[in-house]
Amino acid sequence: MWIFPAVLLLVAAAVAAAIVLYNRLVRLRNTVSSSWSDIGVLLKKRYDLVDNLVETVKGYAVHEKSTLAGVTEARSRAASAASPGEKSRAEGAFGQVLGNLFAVAESYPDLKASANFLGLQQQLRDLEDQIEHSRRYYNAVVRDYNTLTEAFPSNLVAGAFGFSRAEFFEAPAPAESARPKVSF
Image (cartoon, rainbow, N blue to C red; front, side, top):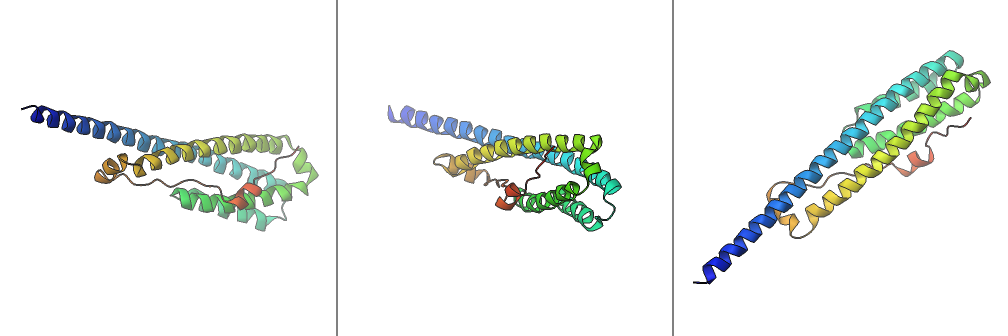
């Protein structure tokens, strides 16, 4: 007689635990999506800002068409990349050509002294810091989500409901070293 209530209690506890784990997985998956969207917003702002930088440099450095074209092309590739892995690779290349743009600016004293150019550099520096912060937050959320999808017993719930690993947004080593140096 007492076996039936004990089994019923165990089943109820297992169902409750599964519900809690499922809700936690959903919450983390939504946080991953939201934080990836935040990165997208910041990167869009950066792409728009770089367009303004290119236009400013064009006014001063008319002989640097290949550098400016390279920046524009890399910006387009980075903007069209979809997944975090693709975006990481495209952003690495974009960071390198952006560094080239600032190297060109060093050759033009009038450009370096331009209030417009200096303001755009400061905005870019601020955006780079925000992007780095958002990337770290996103990767922390992805780490927590991936841990939950792989750890026992939540991996049973994750597998049953189709939760899969999320991809990290890693800045490749060359992109970190080629991060635009903004100097005044």
